[in-house]
Length: 100
Ligand code: SF4
Ligand code: SF4
Image 1 (cartoon, rainbow, N blue to C red):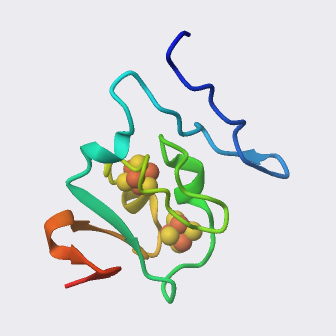
Image 2 (image 1 turned 180 degrees about the vertical axis):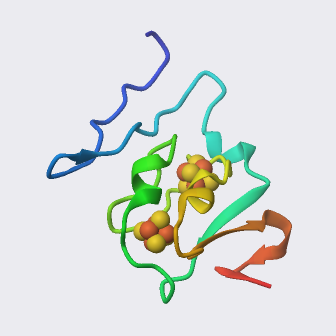
């Protein structure tokens, strides 16, 4: 499609793959839509990768880094997280890498 960047390939681990890949859509980077930001608590995380699999923007890497250029703040990752390691924090309550 003209004017649209081609998607990267989905990430894979063995037979597992992400359901989507981040790409610039006609409205630009989806990170600009975000009012809530997913924040990962490493101590609670069991590395199950459910957030990586379910993220509709595929903006969580298998190393569990979140690409905030594409994260639209939908909360699917937090909803699917079995240990509540991922939580949604209001953007205006988030500063310098730490939620207040
Ligand atoms: S909130 Fe979570 S599931 Fe939604 S786009 Fe951002 S990282 Fe992906
Ligand atoms: S779903 Fe939750 S526990 Fe599983 S890898 Fe993601 S943050 Fe960690």
